[in-house]
Image (cartoon, rainbow, N blue to C red):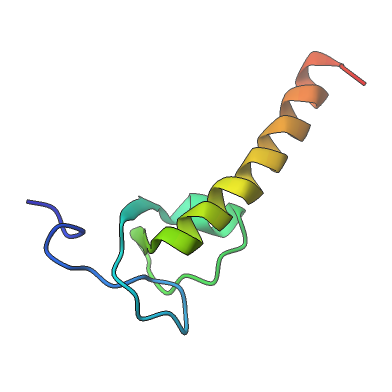
Length: 70
């Protein structure tokens, strides 16, 4: 059983909600999330949606840069 299933709390500073997903700390830093962890970042539903939104934009721009589109 993982830490999320055991009831981990969201790692974002100021959020005390239950975590639903865990991501690497590098992903959280890349999305500029204010997570207070060193290994894995545990995120609640709202912060996970925000992370996906931020990383989606970054990946799309990076993909266009590599492919030379635009």
